[in-house]
Structure formats: C-alpha cells, structure tokens
Amino acid sequence: MNRKEIKSDKDIEEILSIAVSKSGGNDEQSLRARMFESAKELGLTPDEVIAAEEQWHRKTIERDQKAKYVQSIRASFIRNLFLYVVINGAFAAFGFMAGNTIGPALYSIIIWGVFLVMSSLKFITSFFPESAMFETSFASWQKGQESKTFDDELEEKIERKVRRKLSEKFDDDDD
Image (cartoon, rainbow, N blue to C red; front, top):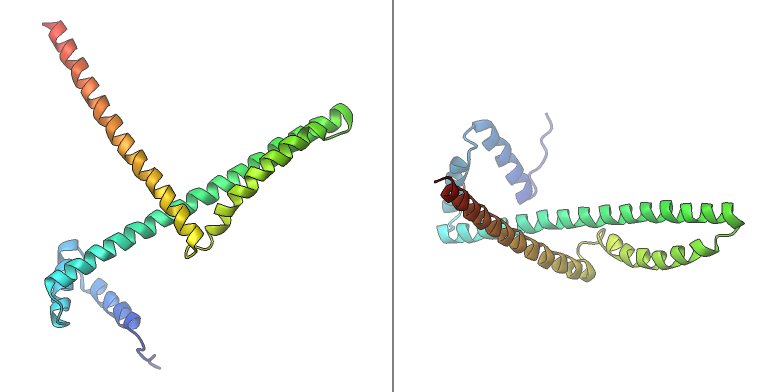
C-alpha cells in the first residue's frame, strides 16, 4: 500500500479525528477531557484552551450567521426577481391586449427595475464574503437581527404577564 505523506496540521487533525471517532466516547464531556489532555501535552494552559474554545464558538456562530444572511439575501433577491418578471410581464401583456403598447407597464418596469438593480448589489456581494461591502451589509443585518431578538423577548415577557394577570382575574372571578 502506498502511504501518503503527512504534510500539514490539517492532515494530523483529520487522522486524530478519525481515531477519536472510532474509539468511542464522543460525548461532549469525553471530548472536552481529551481536548484538555492534548492541550496539556502541547504545553498549553487551561486558560489558553478556554480562550481558544471561546474564540472557536464566536467564529462558529459568526459563520452560521453569515450563512443565514447569505441565504436570506439570495432568497429575497430571487423572490423579488420572480415577482418583477411575473407582474411586469402581466402588465405588459395587458398593455398589448388593450392597445398594442406597453406604455403604462414601462413605468413599473423602470422604477421597479431600479430597485431590483440596487438589491442585486447585495445579491452579488453575497458571493464575495471577504469584501468590505459584504461586511458592512452583514453588520447592518446583524443589528437588525439583534433588535428583532430583543423585541421578540420583550413581546414574550409582556404576553406572559398579560396571561398571568388574566388567569389571576379569572381565578378571582371563580371564587
């Protein structure tokens, strides 16, 4: 059997990952214990490992959020493009049937087209996640997501209080 050379840390990680998965004990507690044992062998302190793990968590969360953002941008653009084609196509067809002209539909085609071109910039930047424009757009989206989360939590708290007050009122009425 021809053996491939081990050339990088990534190769070592892949080999060790295969070995760990075959050895069993893949629950989080076992994996964390192994991580700390390996770190100790490499001369790393527990604080360094914890800091690296926190950094890994942040990167993972950001990567997942970016994937969600890209998916929402692409889906939104494709939906808008579909609506643009269908609705403006219908306007143009009605114009041809009514008077052999697309004059009235032309306004919708141009105005909506301008907005579609503007939204296409976000769509295009979704293919270049390292660009400054993507990062700016993503940061703006993140702020919107955070405010939605805050609003949802606030709404949930208000609903719970209202339900509690209503249940107390109805419990008092039953007495």
